[in-house]
Image (cartoon, rainbow, N blue to C red; front, top):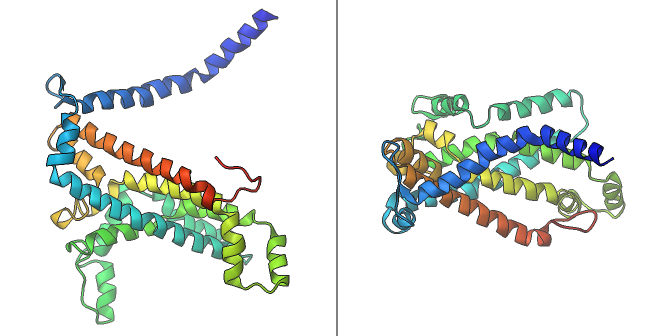
Length: 297
């Protein structure tokens, strides 16, 4: 009997071993090594030289580009996350209606997100918003002057934010699934009581899908804080570094200046930011998130 149990345990370990190896090699080792390198002066060509917290000290006290990129990243996140979720929820509520061909319409709305964050989509967005792009051509048809979408310090960041509004597919799918799980009898009871559409939305719909909203807020915030592809391809940091997010700062330090240790310090700042934001959101989740069983995380 004991031999059979040991055999089952070994078989279980054997089946889980690919995941364990992947976790150790592709996640844990890079995490630990990046933290070590963040405490060193390392440029790939020479051996890492341990310098303690000097990289972090320089970032926080003597690097103006870091503070600019931090400001840009915060602005980008503050506008991108709620904007994308509002658009995704609005579209999901429309797509939740029963109408002819609704499945095909849902698929069409989801298609852009299959290419979300890709270089091809970023290039397309850049072509659309350049000085002679289709967006300015449409404005000119209505006798509206062309706008420097990518060449203006005021418009470059909003243009990139608009790209994220368009890529709402993953949030849209989760919202649509959540809306379908809202009990119909709640709406029927509200109709009997004479409740209007806005009342039902704020009193029934939002509380019932609040857990999905919370999940989407966390995931979209994490994605926004790590943004790189759009700002890099569309503006390359923008005029006067107006779109110079932390992801671009990390890339520049690592692959333009070959300051790998310094770049690792930037990556750990991003990681710390994500951790703090996530913990704060979880801390206050019980105040705004409704769970059917009355529990919380």
